[in-house]
Length: 108
Image 1 (spheres, rainbow, N blue to C red):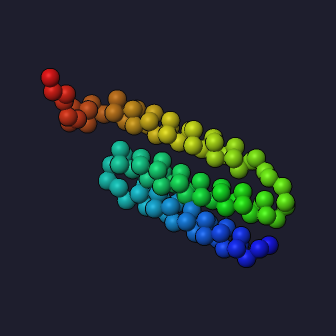
Image 2: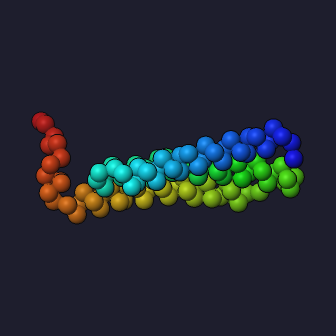
Image 3: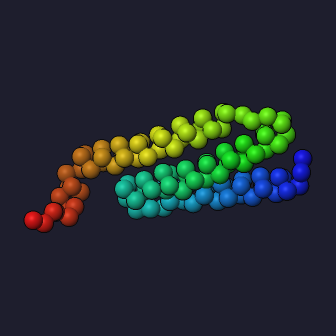
């Protein structure tokens, strides 16, 4: 395999691993549920996207053919992560009446 392709794949893997680590730390260290929701949905999605791009480049370079599997995984991930995060946030707001009363009230 070409050394430039190897370096590109390695860089994408390291970038993906960094964003996955940031997302995991955000999930573990942020104080409440609404803030914890951003770690997996933002940083982790970017990390997985970087790993999927690295996988596409690697398997295209080694096998000589293009595989659609990684694109389907990315499509599924990018469609479901925001929807699930929105549903979790909505369920959290509707579940906790005490937190709902602390939200800023609309002014007229």
